[in-house]
Image (cartoon, rainbow, N blue to C red; front, side, top):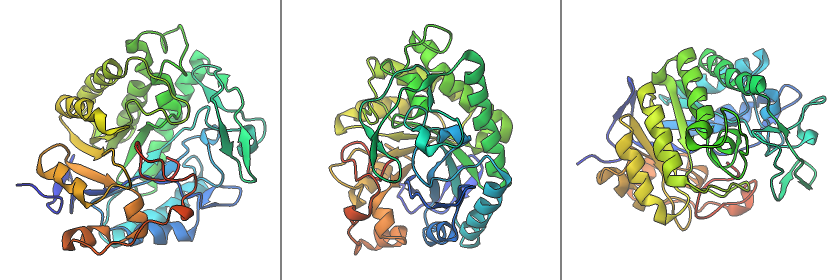
Length: 355
């Protein structure tokens, strides 16, 4: 029987175990260059015993920023700062992927430099508010991307992936989940376009597929992954054809030969779709299961029964940097402190702060 503590081959990269650290927003990027601070290197190095670390969301382009003090991968300063992080993780034997996250409409001009403005597939203002450093403020209407700008956004992901490899990352995970730009193209509530990027399912999945294709062409499919969150309503997302959208999306991604597919379940009742996606994807399958609280040791059974190849832990990894050793020993576990979470612990569809 396969267990969480067995090694696994990730598209040619050997992982020491099948326990992944889920991406979690930390807002620790310093100064005008939005570079990760030295604390970030220490933070990830402490957790290098994970089979795979996936970083916090990193904006691939300046207008992709969605929260205060989040880091980018679009400048020389950022590449150099991330190199210190990846070196620290590798020195302790770990593997680390950069999660590329373009926030799209989940942003605000107050977070962006100069005259930059949030962008989206359509000019649909999300409901709710966001934290912009001094308090909660209302979202604004995003600017609808033109056809040329859509292609520029795709190119931005590819360029950031190239920067990630230069910075020493083992690969990149495209953030296609939780209501950010890639997810906004997938969802009918946020994508009201009538051109090749909107309308029927085959058009709405096009952006996600083309981003994955561009990144894979740039750095190799064996270093390219994507994260999806079917039926996740976070960030005012509305989906009307979830099963068809995601099965067709995974069918379109399958020929690309990506390193892994990372699925975040929105609710326990979504397991049937999870299993359908698992069956359709021949690469490594990473699961952040739907739970009533932070993902815990009981989720290791999902590896033993073949539901997933790796299980991603969020909040429990914050409180227990040596989580794989504690899981193997059966505890004890430090209890995650919800008071330290930026944005809260969104029970039911994720177990980490804002992402």
